[in-house]
Image (cartoon, rainbow, N blue to C red; front, side, top):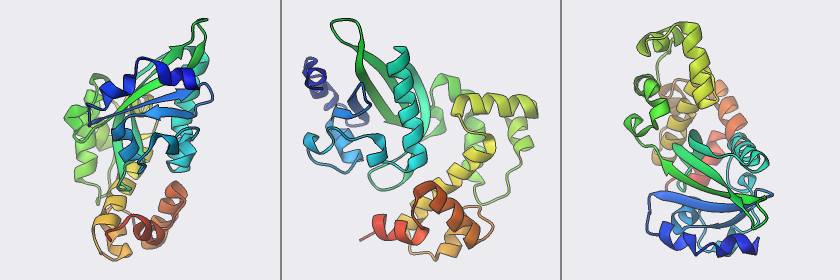
Length: 238
């Protein structure tokens, strides 16, 4: 692990890029180091607090599992992942879309000893990597109509694809079906609303497209492993 920290003090360069999260992990996908922006994202102050940790120490299980899957792919196949769009939780507890790159790190013997990665927040659809741009209007539509019933056929029409072709290409890019993406977008909106407002939970549910509070609470807890009430108590305005 120590050898991975001695690669020319790479982190010093990435500390000059406050909008880029940079990190290095060992072959067991454990965190070795990261830049200051990444420490802030994870709500830590010192490098020693993240050393040896894994994604499950930071993120909800479903997010952690997908990140770990990518890490294993990079390390076991000695293959990079470039511009992968995925969902994480930021330092304020908000679900947020990011663009991630991961490349294998090789030891002197040519064997993979870990990986190096960068993550950048995608705050607007036009910031999506090129491969995802074909769905920028679809994403804008989903975000603008999060409280409404969203027809997948309408999304296919917006992207100028047949229904079946749209579903296939969308899943290939986002590793989520369109329905799952809509649910994640609604959870994203709900998590932000819970934190930044005092609206009753039923109002949050309806405003974010959930048909009732019970269904909302079930889906929210399934993803975050916390009830909306507990999530608000943990992350909400002090």
